Image (cartoon, rainbow, N blue to C red; front, top):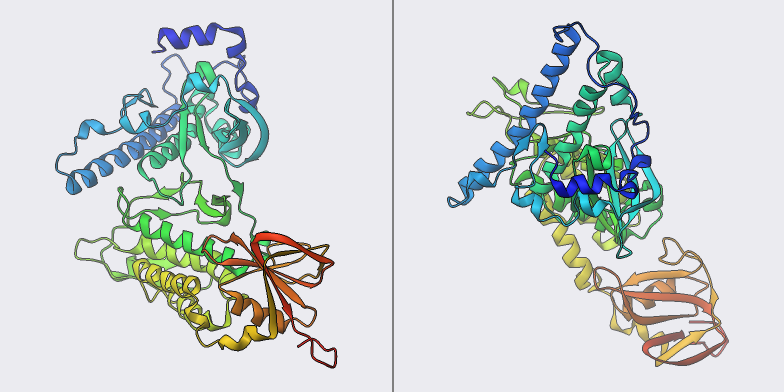
Length: 470
């Protein structure tokens, strides 16, 4: 039942038009309900009700599983904390829902400013909060494939809206239960049809993952994406819902937020591992490889969800992002990771340990310990100075498109790079750092003059008596 506060909002002329343009294809004047006989029980109607019942049971299973897991880990956990569904809607009494700040009332002040994308089931729009921040609004795509196919089957606008909405309802529940750095944050929701035209989820806004752009980025940034993915999969393997499989594992299911990879589409996630009678029932099939796991004594394919996720990470992400342009001295470790994940020889926990070893070596500079200290002797150092009117040259992959800016551990590594570039005559180090804490070095072929800058140091290659650059 809509309370008095929501009735007041709905009666306000300004509020009633909220989000109408967000739900493309919503036909307010079209009659709802099945067009069957007087008894209302046609075969199509019966099938629709059965599908609605199955979707409801799927949502209830999420809550039962969560309650059981929490009760096992914390005996003081109360099952009263589980989500409550009334007429297919998530009750606001759920404490996890209460943690989100944006509800139906707050949505009245939000303006959609851009169209981000749409799929079979959902439409995503960029919206501006009153504070000037941006969020993503995810709602049902009333012109999407799922809605069209449902209407062709059942000719029931209200029933199809409810059926298609279940994917987004499931996603909201999963986002409440699964909270991790590499999963987008659920900032709010509204399931009041009178106010917003249907269910709407308010999410942390990110940029769609562009693999081509990512392939052109520095190796350090590509490694960050892969590391974040491994951390996510390790969490999903031991989540509050048990082992979670991402059945629709594609780069399009992810977004980038401030350089971090984040999972944004969870409606096809599964918390159940397949039942089995023998090992052949535990078959993982991929286009180029098949794997068979053992059927456990409990007659389930234990670990299958984890292995499915890990191999998909290998074939969609690691293969393209990890080996290319990796630091030469780290390549043996990278090769081991590629081999173990490509053959599913290690668990996600072991894979995470391997990634953390690469990160430690890269951040600490241990892979550079054989560089001679004398390598910087060929450079004159001017601390507290910065070059201006620079003559830039391009290198790849660079943090700066029109120049050569690379990540280095120290001046020694920068000197090694500059000495390997024929056009490099100097480089500078500033206080600017990457996410690993490594320095950003700018390499150039020349400059006009120097100016004071306490946060910078310029290294110039010495010139031989013959006039050649060392």
